[in-house]
Image (cartoon, rainbow, N blue to C red):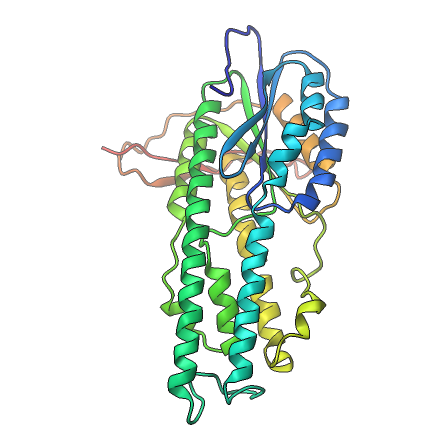
Amino acid sequence: APLKSGSRPRMRRTYLICLDTINSSFANYTYVRGALRKLFKREESGDSLYAILTLGRTLAVAQDLTSDPGKILTAIGSKELTRAIQQSESSNLQHQEDELSYMLDDYCQRCSCAGSAVATGRMATGSDTVCNGKLEKIEMWAGSAAEERSFLTRAFLQNLRAVVLRMSQLPGKRTLVFVSDGFNPHPGRDLFGIISAYTRDPGVMMNSSINDARPDIESILHVASAHDVVFYTLDSRGLTPPGGGTFDASQEVHLSRAAVILPEVLQQKQTTEMEDQQPLAELAKATGGLFFHNNNDLFKGMRQAFADGREYYLLAYVSSNKTTDGKFREIKVVVNGKELTVRAKHGYWAPKS
């Protein structure tokens, strides 16, 4: 079994590096590896435990718990870790979006509304039945792809929850450094967003059946909060342009209605990127960690996570609210001194009767 704690005395803190290999681009891991190497070259053996794992279609331990930073350095450069990272689903997900764009471009070219500034296949005079039939097939394809994404995301989150549960049994201050490009809490909604942008029909989003992964995210938050596992989440994309990512110019030439729909497509991509970052921000905020994003210096974020794990105050109190309703209760920690920054657990869930 991975993450074996064993009987190690006087270990005051545990650091777990978790690399998301489902949603993250392989290219970004060049910078992630560099930051990890820099971090562990400066670590010294002492009263800390370290482990590194990858979270893809399956959970893989690159280096089990060790107090030796040198073993982590070896794992960072290992072929096993490279193979795990190469299995990233990011390129497959991008391929789905590209395939959908080509299908929609073909749909727009063949319908009489091609090039129209306002009309869509649903509204085309004399071709309504034909256009609706083509669009229905595209929406069915998107629905199938969304189901696949939902399956991957649910399995991914269940594995992440298992990691948090295992960490709850480990000694000392428990810090989970989670590195990811981000993931959508509504898997597949971005696909229907692309359809909505092409057809300029907001109803596509409302009529689509998209699964909600938020209950799985909330389950992780419940476990992490109850067992004091702190998330430090790092956006492995690094510095991103203001207002979101850019549109690939190579795709623009394939759009029969580029001048009309390009703003909508760009807006959809920006919305998707914002949604992808929400779970990372929430995991960090709720557990008292830090969401490090829009910065190319990933080492800085990792170093902050390690530093916060070494120096901290432990505060406790007994709530006067005895209601066992299972609801979330917010905690706010205030200190004197404007120059001080507080990072504390955002709250907790009351027990259920």
